[in-house]
Length: 450
Image (cartoon, rainbow, N blue to C red; front, side, top):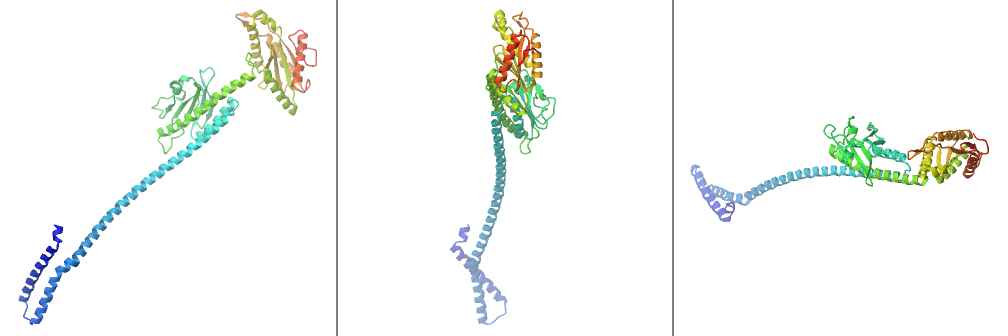
């Protein structure tokens, strides 16, 4: 319909109809006006006619296109305004998406930074544990590293005792460590199930017996295994949950870190235990558990250097079992081993922490006493002699009879300036005690018994 109205034919029809209407209107107007001159009438009629004639043409040729352009402009303006609103909405939407993405990237960046920090600390912990010499040194190292790995939390490291009937606390950290110093294996769900145990809500979740008497946000128990053996558990108490993550996400993150820590600690402790065992085998006598001759000689040289700097004495006691061959010949070599073992236990009961008891060879023993004077060394030797006489030993329900020992005493630097010379002096004193009738103490440089 719009195309028909805009066609040239329709335009001519409208113009002709306009002319007819215009003439009719002009003639009607002139009929009511007073008569005027013919020229003025014709001029007026022609002007009016021309004006009426041109009006439709002006409308169609000038005003109508202009109106159409104005209409198109308004429609275009409305369309542009709508597009602008849509673009503004998309810009706001994309800006919000970018903000969320930026926030997520910030979170990931922080998590990556935390991950790198934790890995660095884990690497440092492994490096330190690999060069630890004793278990005590390792536990002290573990405590310091766990404080850095879990700064907002508290916890403890529990290790199985040799009997494996109990776990004993070996390291603690944080402001609220567990009160329990030891517990039985069946008191921990993690050990009973052989997998990590997480308590998010202490009123709803299954709680371990070793942690029931205390209140806290939540906790984790992580079993530590190495080479197929369970060494103990890491018990972590959550200080407070993160404001960014929910409790489950936070506990999951803590569990992953605790699992990595537990694996490394278990492997390090297992390797340290193996090294200690190998070291013990290399420096200890397998029968008596005392230090062997090689270790004694190394230790004595170190102590001599220290004593020389500090100007302090060192006492040496050489010990020999009287008539030891009789035990082997009468009761068998097993009975002889029992005698040596019990003497080793006796020596360990009568020494200070700084003293070194050794099996020198066969039925001979030697005792190194740092910073002990000649008088004190002789007194210690006499007490050992008397204690040995009180031993009541049996083998296969048969009494082995009384036991006696002979002892020779020497001292650095009075009886020698080297380890070998002092030991030689003590051995000479022991020989003197044997020659004097056994079961006595003799001091180097004298022939009288104490």
